[in-house]
Image (cartoon, rainbow, N blue to C red):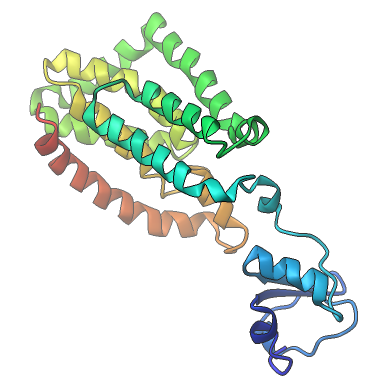
Length: 269
Protein backbone atom coordinates (compact mmCIF):
# COMPACT_ATOMS: atom_id res chain seq x y z
CA UNK A 1 0.00 0.00 0.00
CA UNK A 2 2.88 2.33 0.70
CA UNK A 3 4.20 1.79 -2.83
CA UNK A 4 0.94 2.73 -4.52
CA UNK A 5 0.74 5.95 -2.41
CA UNK A 6 -2.90 5.30 -1.55
CA UNK A 7 -3.16 8.18 0.89
CA UNK A 8 -1.57 10.66 -1.51
CA UNK A 9 -3.65 9.58 -4.50
CA UNK A 10 -7.04 9.26 -2.83
CA UNK A 11 -6.73 11.38 0.34
CA UNK A 12 -7.84 8.49 2.56
CA UNK A 13 -6.17 6.66 5.44
CA UNK A 14 -6.21 2.86 5.61
CA UNK A 15 -6.88 1.77 9.19
CA UNK A 16 -7.69 -1.90 8.68
CA UNK A 17 -7.31 -4.78 6.26
CA UNK A 18 -9.34 -7.99 6.14
CA UNK A 19 -8.21 -11.03 4.18
CA UNK A 20 -10.11 -14.31 3.93
CA UNK A 21 -12.55 -13.10 6.57
CA UNK A 22 -9.87 -12.27 9.16
CA UNK A 23 -8.52 -8.87 10.17
CA UNK A 24 -4.76 -8.56 9.79
CA UNK A 25 -2.66 -7.32 12.69
CA UNK A 26 0.28 -4.97 12.54
CA UNK A 27 1.09 -2.16 10.10
CA UNK A 28 -1.26 -2.75 7.18
CA UNK A 29 0.51 -0.17 5.02
CA UNK A 30 3.38 -2.63 4.56
CA UNK A 31 1.12 -5.47 3.44
CA UNK A 32 1.02 -6.57 -0.19
CA UNK A 33 -2.48 -6.27 -1.59
CA UNK A 34 -4.17 -9.41 -2.88
CA UNK A 35 -7.30 -10.01 -4.87
CA UNK A 36 -10.36 -9.83 -2.60
CA UNK A 37 -8.77 -7.85 0.24
CA UNK A 38 -11.19 -5.60 2.11
CA UNK A 39 -9.83 -2.27 3.36
CA UNK A 40 -11.31 -0.04 6.05
CA UNK A 41 -10.57 3.59 5.20
CA UNK A 42 -11.08 6.85 7.08
CA UNK A 43 -11.41 10.20 5.40
CA UNK A 44 -13.64 12.82 3.88
CA UNK A 45 -16.93 11.48 2.56
CA UNK A 46 -16.37 13.22 -0.75
CA UNK A 47 -13.03 11.48 -1.18
CA UNK A 48 -14.68 8.13 -0.54
CA UNK A 49 -17.38 8.97 -3.09
CA UNK A 50 -14.69 9.93 -5.63
CA UNK A 51 -12.93 6.62 -4.99
CA UNK A 52 -16.20 4.85 -5.77
CA UNK A 53 -16.49 6.71 -9.07
CA UNK A 54 -12.89 6.87 -10.28
CA UNK A 55 -11.15 3.96 -8.59
CA UNK A 56 -10.48 1.37 -11.30
CA UNK A 57 -8.85 -1.13 -8.97
CA UNK A 58 -11.09 -0.66 -5.95
CA UNK A 59 -14.76 -1.28 -5.25
CA UNK A 60 -16.44 0.75 -2.49
CA UNK A 61 -18.70 -1.72 -0.70
CA UNK A 62 -20.57 0.87 1.37
CA UNK A 63 -20.43 4.49 2.39
CA UNK A 64 -20.25 5.64 6.04
CA UNK A 65 -23.56 5.19 7.82
CA UNK A 66 -23.49 8.87 8.79
CA UNK A 67 -24.00 9.85 5.15
CA UNK A 68 -27.69 9.03 5.43
CA UNK A 69 -27.97 11.26 8.51
CA UNK A 70 -26.14 14.25 7.02
CA UNK A 71 -27.89 17.60 6.89
CA UNK A 72 -30.03 17.99 3.76
CA UNK A 73 -29.22 21.72 3.56
CA UNK A 74 -25.50 22.39 3.86
CA UNK A 75 -25.90 25.92 2.51
CA UNK A 76 -27.98 26.89 5.53
CA UNK A 77 -25.09 26.41 7.96
CA UNK A 78 -24.89 30.15 8.87
CA UNK A 79 -28.58 30.12 9.82
CA UNK A 80 -28.05 26.99 11.91
CA UNK A 81 -25.14 28.63 13.74
CA UNK A 82 -27.28 31.72 14.34
CA UNK A 83 -30.03 29.56 15.88
CA UNK A 84 -27.51 27.82 18.12
CA UNK A 85 -26.00 31.11 19.31
CA UNK A 86 -29.48 32.53 19.91
CA UNK A 87 -30.45 29.53 22.03
CA UNK A 88 -27.30 29.79 24.16
CA UNK A 89 -27.81 33.54 24.59
CA UNK A 90 -31.42 33.08 25.70
CA UNK A 91 -30.35 30.42 28.19
CA UNK A 92 -27.56 32.59 29.61
CA UNK A 93 -29.78 35.64 30.08
CA UNK A 94 -32.50 33.64 31.89
CA UNK A 95 -35.13 35.71 30.12
CA UNK A 96 -37.15 32.62 29.25
CA UNK A 97 -37.04 29.00 30.47
CA UNK A 98 -34.42 26.79 28.84
CA UNK A 99 -36.94 24.41 27.20
CA UNK A 100 -38.69 27.37 25.57
CA UNK A 101 -35.34 28.67 24.28
CA UNK A 102 -34.56 25.28 22.76
CA UNK A 103 -38.00 25.05 21.12
CA UNK A 104 -37.63 28.55 19.64
CA UNK A 105 -34.28 27.62 18.11
CA UNK A 106 -35.67 24.39 16.68
CA UNK A 107 -38.60 26.20 15.10
CA UNK A 108 -36.27 28.81 13.60
CA UNK A 109 -34.14 26.03 12.09
CA UNK A 110 -37.25 24.69 10.45
CA UNK A 111 -38.20 28.18 9.28
CA UNK A 112 -34.76 28.71 7.71
CA UNK A 113 -34.96 25.22 6.15
CA UNK A 114 -31.85 24.07 7.98
CA UNK A 115 -33.51 20.73 8.55
CA UNK A 116 -36.66 19.00 7.39
CA UNK A 117 -39.18 17.05 9.44
CA UNK A 118 -37.75 13.66 8.45
CA UNK A 119 -34.21 14.55 9.48
CA UNK A 120 -35.46 16.09 12.72
CA UNK A 121 -37.34 12.89 13.54
CA UNK A 122 -34.28 10.75 12.83
CA UNK A 123 -32.15 12.97 15.08
CA UNK A 124 -34.22 12.07 18.15
CA UNK A 125 -32.36 9.54 20.29
CA UNK A 126 -35.29 7.43 21.40
CA UNK A 127 -33.35 5.07 23.72
CA UNK A 128 -32.28 8.02 25.88
CA UNK A 129 -35.81 9.38 26.02
CA UNK A 130 -37.26 5.99 26.92
CA UNK A 131 -34.58 5.51 29.57
CA UNK A 132 -35.30 8.87 31.21
CA UNK A 133 -39.08 8.44 31.04
CA UNK A 134 -38.75 4.92 32.42
CA UNK A 135 -36.60 6.00 35.37
CA UNK A 136 -38.87 8.88 36.39
CA UNK A 137 -41.70 6.61 37.65
CA UNK A 138 -39.08 4.57 39.50
CA UNK A 139 -37.77 7.69 41.25
CA UNK A 140 -41.34 8.78 42.00
CA UNK A 141 -42.08 5.34 43.45
CA UNK A 142 -39.09 5.73 45.79
CA UNK A 143 -40.56 9.01 47.02
CA UNK A 144 -44.09 7.65 47.48
CA UNK A 145 -43.02 4.46 49.27
CA UNK A 146 -40.57 6.17 51.60
CA UNK A 147 -37.47 4.81 49.91
CA UNK A 148 -36.01 8.29 49.49
CA UNK A 149 -36.64 9.09 53.16
CA UNK A 150 -34.95 5.86 54.17
CA UNK A 151 -31.84 6.63 52.10
CA UNK A 152 -31.74 10.22 53.33
CA UNK A 153 -32.05 9.08 56.92
CA UNK A 154 -29.11 6.76 56.41
CA UNK A 155 -27.08 9.60 54.93
CA UNK A 156 -28.02 11.88 57.82
CA UNK A 157 -26.92 9.26 60.33
CA UNK A 158 -23.56 8.96 58.59
CA UNK A 159 -22.76 12.54 57.60
CA UNK A 160 -25.57 14.81 58.78
CA UNK A 161 -23.79 15.95 61.92
CA UNK A 162 -20.45 16.46 60.17
CA UNK A 163 -21.46 19.25 57.80
CA UNK A 164 -22.64 19.60 54.21
CA UNK A 165 -19.20 18.98 52.68
CA UNK A 166 -19.15 15.40 53.89
CA UNK A 167 -22.73 14.98 52.70
CA UNK A 168 -21.68 16.11 49.23
CA UNK A 169 -18.91 13.53 49.29
CA UNK A 170 -21.35 10.80 50.30
CA UNK A 171 -23.74 11.75 47.51
CA UNK A 172 -20.89 11.68 45.00
CA UNK A 173 -19.82 8.22 46.17
CA UNK A 174 -23.40 6.94 45.94
CA UNK A 175 -23.78 8.27 42.40
CA UNK A 176 -20.46 6.75 41.36
CA UNK A 177 -21.41 3.39 42.89
CA UNK A 178 -24.81 3.30 41.18
CA UNK A 179 -23.16 4.38 37.93
CA UNK A 180 -21.15 1.16 37.98
CA UNK A 181 -24.26 -0.77 37.00
CA UNK A 182 -26.60 1.63 35.17
CA UNK A 183 -26.08 4.53 32.79
CA UNK A 184 -25.19 8.01 33.99
CA UNK A 185 -28.52 9.41 32.76
CA UNK A 186 -30.50 6.93 34.85
CA UNK A 187 -28.21 7.60 37.82
CA UNK A 188 -28.94 11.33 37.70
CA UNK A 189 -32.71 10.78 37.51
CA UNK A 190 -32.58 8.33 40.41
CA UNK A 191 -30.30 10.34 42.70
CA UNK A 192 -31.76 13.83 42.18
CA UNK A 193 -34.71 13.38 44.60
CA UNK A 194 -32.37 11.95 47.24
CA UNK A 195 -29.99 14.91 46.94
CA UNK A 196 -32.80 17.45 47.17
CA UNK A 197 -34.31 15.70 50.19
CA UNK A 198 -30.91 15.60 51.91
CA UNK A 199 -30.45 19.35 51.37
CA UNK A 200 -33.92 19.99 52.78
CA UNK A 201 -33.18 17.88 55.86
CA UNK A 202 -29.99 19.83 56.51
CA UNK A 203 -31.68 23.17 55.91
CA UNK A 204 -29.22 24.29 53.22
CA UNK A 205 -29.49 25.31 49.57
CA UNK A 206 -30.29 22.43 47.20
CA UNK A 207 -28.21 23.88 44.33
CA UNK A 208 -24.80 22.48 45.36
CA UNK A 209 -26.37 19.08 46.07
CA UNK A 210 -28.07 18.90 42.69
CA UNK A 211 -24.89 20.03 40.94
CA UNK A 212 -22.84 17.34 42.69
CA UNK A 213 -25.29 14.71 41.43
CA UNK A 214 -25.00 16.09 37.89
CA UNK A 215 -21.20 16.08 38.02
CA UNK A 216 -20.99 12.66 39.68
CA UNK A 217 -23.29 11.16 37.08
CA UNK A 218 -21.16 12.71 34.33
CA UNK A 219 -17.97 11.28 35.85
CA UNK A 220 -18.75 7.87 34.34
CA UNK A 221 -15.22 6.55 34.00
CA UNK A 222 -15.09 3.32 35.98
CA UNK A 223 -16.97 0.75 33.89
CA UNK A 224 -17.83 0.20 30.21
CA UNK A 225 -21.57 0.40 30.96
CA UNK A 226 -21.42 3.71 32.82
CA UNK A 227 -21.70 5.71 29.61
CA UNK A 228 -22.49 4.99 25.93
CA UNK A 229 -19.12 6.55 25.07
CA UNK A 230 -17.31 3.92 27.16
CA UNK A 231 -19.26 1.15 25.46
CA UNK A 232 -18.48 2.62 22.05
CA UNK A 233 -14.69 2.44 22.51
CA UNK A 234 -14.69 -0.89 24.34
CA UNK A 235 -14.65 -3.07 21.23
CA UNK A 236 -12.43 -1.10 18.84
CA UNK A 237 -9.91 -0.37 21.59
CA UNK A 238 -9.92 -4.00 22.79
CA UNK A 239 -10.19 -2.78 26.37
CA UNK A 240 -11.16 -5.00 29.27
CA UNK A 241 -13.37 -4.26 32.25
CA UNK A 242 -10.30 -3.90 34.46
CA UNK A 243 -8.81 -1.27 32.13
CA UNK A 244 -11.69 1.07 32.89
CA UNK A 245 -11.37 0.39 36.62
CA UNK A 246 -7.62 1.09 36.68
CA UNK A 247 -7.95 4.38 34.82
CA UNK A 248 -11.43 5.39 35.95
CA UNK A 249 -11.06 5.11 39.72
CA UNK A 250 -8.24 7.70 40.03
CA UNK A 251 -10.08 10.06 37.69
CA UNK A 252 -13.30 9.65 39.67
CA UNK A 253 -11.54 10.38 42.96
CA UNK A 254 -9.93 13.47 41.46
CA UNK A 255 -13.26 14.75 40.12
CA UNK A 256 -14.91 14.09 43.49
CA UNK A 257 -12.32 16.14 45.39
CA UNK A 258 -12.58 19.04 42.94
CA UNK A 259 -16.39 19.00 42.94
CA UNK A 260 -16.78 18.82 46.73
CA UNK A 261 -14.38 21.74 47.22
CA UNK A 262 -15.31 23.94 44.25
CA UNK A 263 -19.09 23.54 43.83
CA UNK A 264 -19.95 25.15 47.22
CA UNK A 265 -17.82 28.14 46.19
CA UNK A 266 -19.85 28.61 43.00
CA UNK A 267 -23.18 27.57 44.56
CA UNK A 268 -23.03 28.49 48.28
CA UNK A 269 -24.92 26.52 50.87
